[in-house]
Length: 414
Image 1 (cartoon, rainbow, N blue to C red):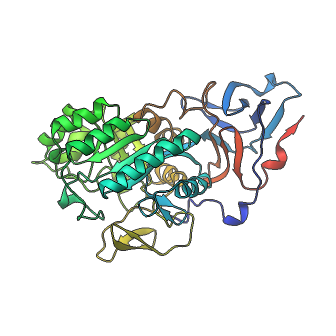
Image 2 (image 1 turned 135 degrees about the horizontal axis):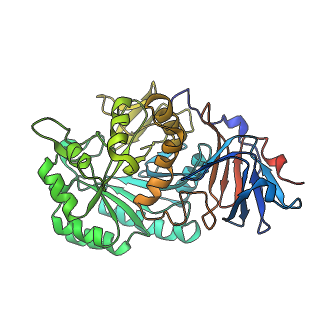
Image 3 (image 1 turned 120 degrees about the vertical axis):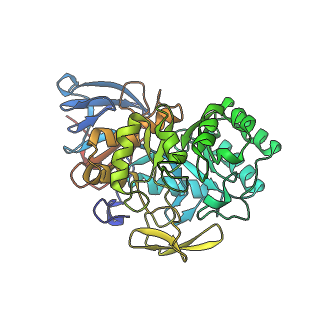
């Protein structure tokens, strides 16, 4: 993680959860980034887990309890479509509800309220285990874990990166059937190399409603375009682990730049992608560029090493690298990614926030209830300092689930 855009220190994590219950309350005194507007002197009215109104503060009843936003910025809770681990845990290492709980608690400190736990290349048995876990977990927390991201195992060995090459393999019909049957409520996203997967398998997954993403791929421009025709709707960590854009060989990067309706995830940490490339990608992809973290166990901890794909990865100078220098995920949070886009890539704050909220929600077709601050949407809200990009408080399903200490006492009746 960078030092410039840090999450709040653990000393500030003692603020108790504020239970508001079904009685409406208003979030006031903050600048609202709704996803479409930037509003001041307006309030969000929240009842239970839902935003029920967005009104001028002057119209609030004097009797309504208020949560004072202290003049900070308020945005929809961040949505991370690629999260391998954080808080000292790695999803591949322990496919359990406790792991998902730890990831969520860690996420709250940096403003992320919803995520796709990402299972990188592994065995069929582990994939089946993850599908079963997410199926059950979502019965209890459907807005916390939005589904599973299977990153692999149907990848190009030459672009495998840190993934365990022992498990990189061709797609087989039985497992494709299993994934498709799980459907998008369980498997939201699958990353595969389109040049190594039969078009009929891509079609089957896409027709099941699963977002198919091209990644860890050596696809030529032509093979990538064939993948898009078969149903690929996204690329995973743009520029990384994929065939590059060259004059005589546009590759997967050139192919996705040619398709306005294909989404692209990007890791804006200054290590995976040059900020000039982030800026260029944003100008080309516009509302189809999505911030992801690709985060790993060091986020939210002091860990200096961990394991991925059977090999040690070291966290040094903000980078996660193996002994041979291969990048092994990231130590990034979405609040940092937003700040990096604003400060280093010349992207407006409103647009950078959409890249972490509205656009990922659209990519996985949940933008009718997450990713915006509007009546009828889930009350997942991140309060942050827009100058330093530090998170000050997080409302999760209508409840002040995390705060820096001065939010909780401000819940009051005027």
